[in-house]
Image (cartoon, rainbow, N blue to C red):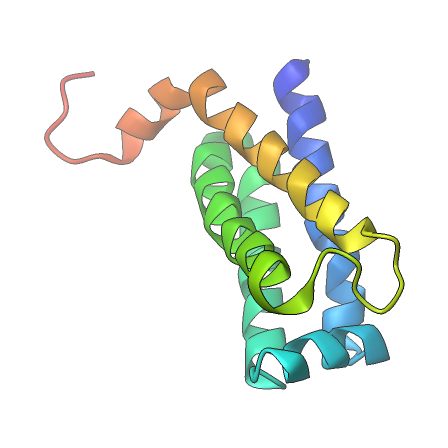
Length: 126
């Protein structure tokens, strides 16, 4: 039950942000322009978030999605702390908080599903 809750939180947040990335919403375009990654970074990160979300939602691949999600969101938090700021376009820190919640959810999934990771590692005794 806990793992499903964490899965839904992480995937739900990432999937929700895809609308803004894929429709070139002004907020999303602003962020990626400021980072010098517009439009390819916006679309590329959106694709990676879609893949991570789908992997998280399928029980057999949740660990892979969580690890990919961690990588993506660590990058997002890094850019918030170094270039964007916590309060982006007067959002009150909402995007930053959503990134933290997603990171915490993905990180919590890893120890809960660490045995699943061995299914993807070569030369392991199961």
